[in-house]
Length: 372
Image (cartoon, rainbow, N blue to C red; front, side, top):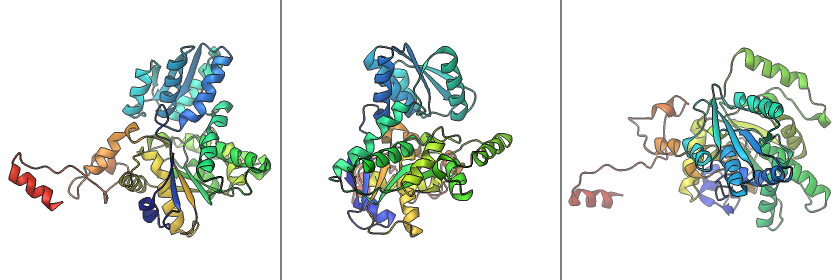
């Protein structure tokens, strides 16, 4: 669903009718993952897979589990890291019958192990390294263009986690332009959380570029080796993009090249503030989704995005995927901030909308109501 949001446009510094939200929370499992998983699960059935597996921060596992439960053709095993999955997402995988394996480590560790297990046991792998996943995720851009009557926007802004979406979007636009279905390609902005900013570091800080496919692989190898030596781990409240080793890193470089793209990082404070504004505008989303709006606001402040540009921000998942951060933010006051928020650098909640505590007394309740 594509929706123009003037309240969010105002927050980001854009003109009315210039900012659109592509909301993926209405898909069967509540996230964008369904666009690719419907293709991957169909292929799994076609090749006769008996077991399919994935590593997940939550949305991938929920999506794979729901399609497997409908197909009734193969079993599902989900790998998650210790304490690294939102309960709203985990509940879906459990309810849809997936078997969950929790390992000591984070998503990057879980992905490494699931790839080894799938290779060793002949299990069908459903992470976004699966090409059918990315082919399916191109459909998000087809729907955006259809909703805009095939008038290409100026910008597509997307959260950067495992970089499957950005890679798929770049491929979609490259192919659409080659087929003559669009006359130009929009610019792409990939937004990392500051606590999981591998692409930002390599692309914007180190200047790594696609270079026709001959990008400096030694630079990325050295970066990841240094990450291992320092035992750097991703850390952000936006759990869906809490990934330090994006499996589609090289493909995202191609997408950035095709789309004359940029990469930015935003803080958890910026993400949660943007999330509150998205919600106040009528579309609740999970924290990672709001990285796109926070990124659009940042790029506007830098003068990269103009006030009159038509910008599409991708909202990747439903609000109820990860409600804990939402409740903590809106329950915050100047005197009290949730410890989990402050540990991630969120020290204020300017758009909080917490419950008002009042005695069980009619007159006092009415007094509160009249003061609103």
